[in-house]
Length: 392
Ligand SMILES: Cc1ncc(COP(=O)(O)O)c(C=O)c1O
Image 1: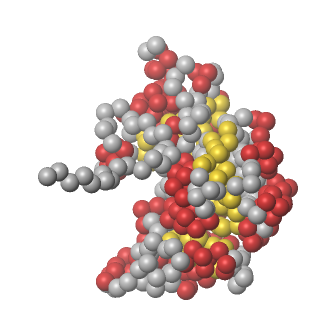
Image 2: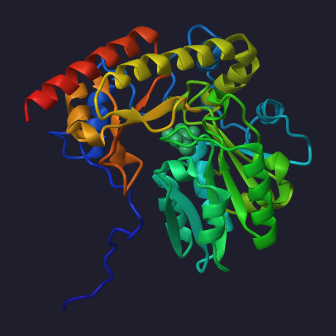
């Protein structure tokens, strides 16, 4: 007798349009390859390789040596770490916080908590596509607004949000500064977002993963506390991407609601939390050095890009630690350039990783790496342009 059972099949989420580099069958295989090459220059994931002996690594080593990892941490995060994140943001006791396994978990929790099945979310293209993916799991659909043009300043403006919202819009994603372009908001725009959020009872998902690289940054939480959830990461400015740690911050109503749907019920990596506390405490010692180096590094890239006919940087200077090099008029595709650079031991990402509509136009490179490596990139980029144009 044959028993008919429902098969478990892949879910139909809005998956990021990932194009795999030449010769790799899966994204995991590719990442494992770049990870295992000690000479690979890491310009493909906006990670930060500028930390030295700042006390972060030392705090984590001490935690391991103390055998801390045998225990579970307090499930919402060490109170001292929660306090430090709030102090770092300058937010007071009217806000609440949960420590998470990275901004990624925070984004997931926010989408799960805020969206009902009939709700839609407004995001932008280019943008951080995992947010579209999470929002499409819990809500009805995602409106990914095209922003790759000068008219809107390469960002999701308040006008664009107004044009795209409807009665079921519940969430607007503001990645600020924006991955992959490095655009960010003015004080006037933030005020307009507050009005939109309050008038339409919408939540603003303020992803501030790249905040500390920006010249001037203001928290939406300060402007519009009741309608903002703030997503915080230790991966970029603190250089701790591999430790997987972050936070989500909001008024108690929001955070209490998120408490009911937590995933990591037994808490976030304890060694990472010890590193994170040292990272915030030591920040005044290293922040200027890290910021100045990233600024200087983007100048080096700009000088190289300016030498190539048909290439330009979409947003310059970038307020993040990454930028998009537009190459549509060079005759060389971002994919060809990314494959060429891998051969020269530089990991960069073609635009399709962060855009469905404009990915064929740009290469995304991050530059929080030692300046000598950026100089090597500039040389390889110019040589690659010559070689790839010549091969056509
Ligand atoms: C906008 C944005 N949010 C979140 C993340 C992921 O952060 P985390 O490593 O803390 O999960 C990234 C990583 O690139 C990002 O670009």
